[in-house]
Structure formats: C-alpha cells, structure tokens
Length: 221
Image (cartoon, rainbow, N blue to C red; front, side, top):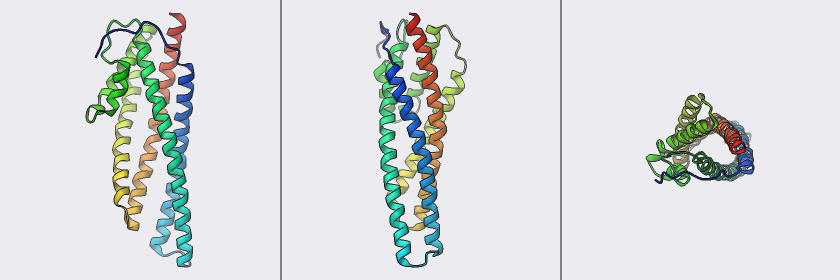
C-alpha cells in the first residue's frame, strides 16, 4: 500500500448529501420490511392454527402476502445496493481527503473500500481503515474528536452482527418449506432488519461528523 499523501482536497458536498439520503431511505425500508415481516408471521400463524374460513381464503392471503413481500424485498434490495455503492464512494473520498498533508497513511482510498470484499480480512481491515481516516481528519482539523472510539467501535460491532444475522437469514430462506421453517426464517429476517436500524444510524453519524470536519479543513486549507 502506497504511503504517498493526496495533494488537494476533493469536494464531497454532493456525495455526502446523496449518501445520507439513501442511508435514511435504507433505514426507512428496514422499518417497512419489519412491518411486512410481522404481517407475514401473522399469516403463517393463522395457517398453522387453521384460522382461515376456507382453503380459498388461505390461498388468497398467502398470495397477497407473497406479493407484498416480493415488492418490499425488491425495493429494499435496490435501496440497499444504491446506499452501499454511495457509502463505498464516500469512504473512498473521505480516505482521499484524509491523506491531504498526511505524512503517512497505511490505507489508500482503493484499499479502504477493497478490504470490504476480502473474506476474513473484512472482519477488521475496513474498521482499521475508517479509524485511520477518522484520526487523520482529527489531526488536520486540530480536534480531538474523542467520540471516535466508541462511535466506530459500536458501528463495527453492529456491522459484524448484521452480516452474521443476514447470512443466517439467507441460508434459512434457501431451505424453508414448512410453516415452522418459514416462521423461523421470518423471525431471523426481522432480527436482521432490526439490527440494520442502529447500524445505519451509527454510520450516518460517522458520515455527518467526518464530512463536516473535512469540509472545515477544505475551506481553511
């Protein structure tokens, strides 16, 4: 990894704005997915208890549930992908700007993003990159930014938990056939969506704090 510094700040105003917009959209979709998931649990429980008046009523409820879940899942996936791409672009830009005037930084902008896609190493390397971005930004701004320790630590803890739960939900969805299996899968998916909310809130705080501090450095440098 090269240790050369960047020579000029790159304006990130528009990127910051769109990243935050889609992070909020992603959080909103998580809430919608939770509501839809609870509705699916109610349908599954009614099917298990035989609470429907007829086979036709049960099939209609199941079909309506599947349609709703498919629409929510597609929208959630599209928002997730967009928010993810923007977040990675933001990390790349934040790392680039953190290197301005820095004597040495281990992580280049490319690797600050690339480590997210390297198995096993992605459990700690992206966190180290973000910590380095945070610390170098603080040095440039002559600020302590002491909240970085707990904020980054909490964010990364939720990130790991979110990935573990989401992976479990995906694996369960591949083999869920019975009502009990579908109910268990839905509960794990609900847990995944619930974890995503504080995870997104924490990352929003990181984006806001780093972006505002780097903007001050850009204007005064």
